[in-house]
Length: 419
Ligand SMILES: NC(=O)C1=CN([C@@H]2O[C@H](COP(=O)(O)OP(=O)(O)OC[C@H]3O[C@@H](n4cnc5c(N)ncnc54)[C@H](OP(=O)(O)O)[C@@H]3O)[C@@H](O)[C@H]2O)C=CC1
Ligand SMILES: C=C(/C=C/[C@@H](C)[C@H]1CC[C@H]2C3=CC=C4C[C@@H](O)CC[C@]4(C)[C@H]3CC[C@]12C)C(C)C
Image (cartoon, rainbow, N blue to C red):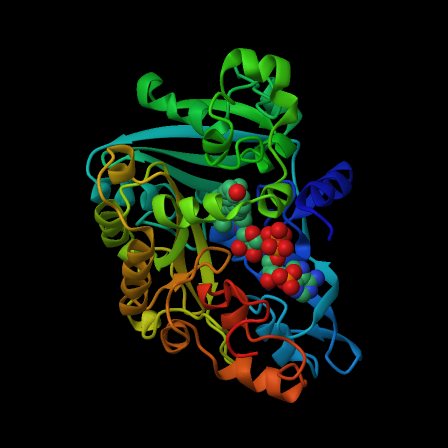
């Protein structure tokens, strides 16, 4: 139950931070490990779970074990991410910390052109085609892309900077973490008019930059939330607690979100990004889209997700023998056809997306609505290690299987179809 906000507050006074710190204040360590956690530094370090060196778990038989990548419980260590609490209860975690500086030098670069051009510029900014593996300083510490329409995007890159550098004459310091400041994605969008600009941001405000507006979902819940007067007087109230929203969600709101709203993340290898953006445009036409690069590591044991088969012999910019460069495409908001009052079927759009992902050997994020069948789900994810670990540690008789926990088939029944 330790949150991302508590984590950064506890580590930054010592000049250190986790390698990957997902942006929303209230996400929990347990949630981002058993589900998945990502941030603009994941192109270097991978997903949050990969930055942890040990998990302490309570197993179905009551044993408390410490699992690491190379002890007798290494199978548990590999199987916990994406398992959604269906293997054991995570009660302790050892997280790797890195030394960090007090500021982030943020560069906002506008891109105008086709979706294919956006994908190309985005990729060039964090893994240049001439990437020299011996020159890692060419690679920024943080990267994210926000695609505002079928032809416009702003890619932001961040590099840690000292207080002295930030304070140098001519540099702009902008602490956009304050409640009266414009929401981050709106501020970033101004690069489309201003052109490329650079500013220095206190590092904690940068880490949590999407909290106040829940990326851009906050605008749907509080439509006037970014109005200057609202920000000035009531901005400190933002964001509404996601757990409270979930708890108070009525059937009507839930149906609206499933049928007339998109909230999905697609994980794709980078060389499929342009095709994925085209697919998103045809299937959802929802903007902005979020692009967050991350490395996916090849593992000997296999996990629920792994690199694309054959990637080592078909290496793309940024790939190594042991990790492939992927991107999380976040699709959150009201689809174009719904805005234009046209017919649009949210369930069908999700099914289309799941099929596209299965056909492309890519993955869906499981916090979202999952419509695919159990058989299709296990075509997308690799069940080998997951099933072996559940069987070996007695989880099968204690915890519901991940598919029944997260999929739509359980809705309406307390324990899911299988139970
Ligand atoms: N940048 C990012 O990475 C972001 C990620 N997210 C998504 O939000 C989720 C995290 O949200 P959060 O509210 O913290 O988590 P949730 O409470 O939604 O938990 C996510 C899953 O992990 C399980 N879980 C949580 N803690 C434990 C634990 N200690 N031991 C075993 N299982 C556990 C939950 O099981 P149970 O249901 O039984 O509680 C649930 O299935 C992530 O999984 C991610 O998909 C959202 C926004 C940003
Ligand atoms: C996974 C990522 C980001 C996801 C966020 C955009 C969504 C995660 C949880 C989402 C929400 C949860 C519950 C809600 C209650 C509803 O009544 C309203 C919608 C919502 C607030 C919904 C909004 C989107 C999320 C915050 C990435 C970054 C990996």
